[in-house]
Image (cartoon, rainbow over all chains, first blue to last red; front, side):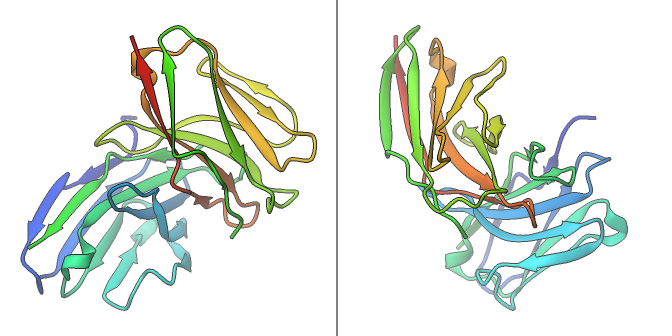
Length: 114
Length: 110
């Protein structure tokens, strides 16, 4: 297994366009997390899945954001009608269930909204 | 969500030990303390975690205060490759989600 992979690594889009990011977790991991990180800040939690079920969404996740994890494998994060404030690094992480396990992060997708 | 407090930045010379402190006075009794580090343009990387007892692994040691309100990440001999932002986080018992603060930027000088 090559770890958590995210695609694309970079995305430049015009304001108002929709974008979709993909995350492929480590295959046996049932937990999958999405985070957003802006310059100089730590990652901010957005949402997480237990298998295919989305169990929690942060208040940061406005109605323009939606995430899915069909069949409990890969996940997608879609942002509709992008705004300049959406420019950030979007990070995906996966892990086994349990607070005593380590989480593995992907390298992120850097979104720039122009 | 419980919060962590870390110094914004620290400096070290190569091959010297580094002690990175973290305060987490609101931690719950079942939350694990996790440390991650992040190199520029990369996702965070796991370093170490613990609940109550001190922990050692090949990367670092974690010293946890008896009251669990603080912890210290110890890098025994800093190298230039250890220069990164280090995050002290919790992993919640119920959701396993990691809550990050702003971290400590460690600079290592040759």
